[in-house]
Length: 165
Image 1 (cartoon, rainbow, N blue to C red):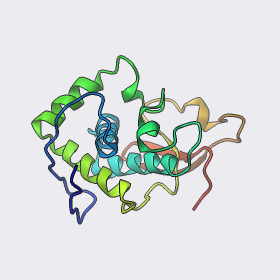
Image 2 (image 1 turned 45 degrees about the vertical axis):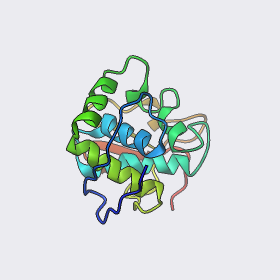
Image 3 (image 1 turned 90 degrees about the vertical axis):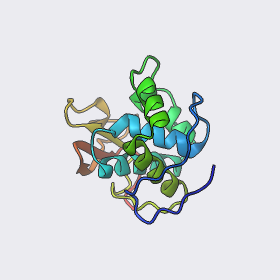
Image 4 (image 1 turned 60 degrees about the horizontal axis):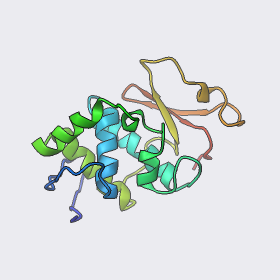
């Protein structure tokens, strides 16, 4: 897949997408994850989710060893869970040239080239503020409570295992 020139992290790019499922190309996997996780939020929200994916990928642990395994690992991003209603929606977005998907794809390309600034302060986890805080905010895998870093577009970002940068 060609790598686009993308001067702004929020500028959509259009690359023809064939919808084979599940995707295997890292940029497509990340873009699909961003779209499914935060398409109705904001561009900054997708940017922050992308940062979490890359922070995890750059610090391999139980959550995965690269961008693809981080996105698709069991129960890491709920949109990938079996029975997710998001999958048919993102397939349609890919086929129909959805602008939010194009933005997600641009963010994914920048992130995979290490050209996307981290706006989450090295967060490795987040949750939507419309739900109660998950258990890992208080204690995770025997670690002390998670460290809150920032709130962006209705999501609260935390470091559960990573150090501040």
